[in-house]
Length: 133
Length: 435
Figure 1 (spheres, rainbow over the protein chains, first blue to last red):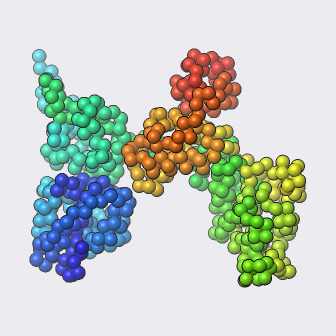
Figure 2: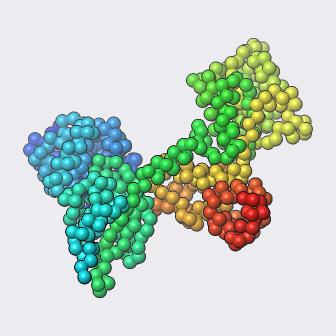
């Protein structure tokens, strides 16, 4: 469940085998991480099985109160759906879920201030793949 | 002797000269080789891809459910021509056709796999262009008669003339009415539809012309009819052949001087409405049987568009199946790429007595039931299996043979199979009809 504190946010990561799922729309499981932005630490991680059809995943995540999504590949139509729901997005990230979250907390300029524009995310795609988490 | 493929450097050069994408994986599905075409299609370079799980680089829609490489490993067989979509590094979806095989050492042990794939974007774009060429306002047909109707529809729509649409149930009369309305100067105003066969006479009269309070038991307030709702727009009188005779008189008056009275009212109103009538029965015959007024028939019969049954335009069946598959995949969020050859053959020979509507229902049902990437026989209703060779046409005439050739896209083997004859017999028939 999302934390009511304004310093806590809920981040969703599509996953498989404890790694970031290669495609948002094909994920059958999401890691939901409650993150304390002030203390820069992850308070809680849970997993949710996802049996939603691809076009319903964004609204399904919204029902959990998700603030942001970190993922690898994501179709542009789903980027727009998240944007319309006010959920920020960082795409192009692959690797182990825990490492991805640690990395995110360390460099958390990834779209936590406001919903980033889609082109802005593209650079993170390059950066994160270069790091190969 | 050292062969070029034995030298890793030469092998990479050979792979890079291939136009199709090629990559190899180890037994854990981690990428061990990647050629230049694969780099270009995925957007990931060799350094980024080598050693990574292939699903994280190729990002297909089947990585976790029907991966061709996993299937090849599981069955030991080559997997060929599986159509999937990949998401490239920039999140563009690219349709590809995939082949996958197991790589074995000299003792026959599996040491990895190889996948080759071809970009289908251009083919898909071409198919979509062809479909666009034959489509018109949510309708699609390559049939000459339908093309002729599409051709004259804008001119008819532009006039205010009354149109009579005749065609069997499910042929798309309402789509034609919608196109006539959309292409007319009345497009900003409503298109109102009323089914003349759906209500008893008094209720139908009230529904079309409106009703004054107290006109009959239950008429507790003044209520506008469909005519008033359609003001400035178009009124489609569906199944006009079912209109009761007393109402035919009232409608005739309306058509002749644009005046009408609501049920229970003496007040004469004027209407600015364009009329389209539709019927599945032959109004000529109803006139002969005194069930339809001749004067109304002549008043309606200014422009009559006869919409052919699907059996008369069987060359459209493949187009309609493709269109329906795309439409319902989009509706239900599925990625089904095709019909299996067996399912397609059954769908091509099915008689579709319910016309396009029945075809759409069959495909919608199949899309809902299908969990994989192609619609198979088990996804089709049992009724489609009733078109046995005994019911098929034998020794067809020239026109029928021409239609069948179009339907089977010139594939004589499939056509001969459908007709239950060998290819020589089919060839003899074609020769006889100079086809």
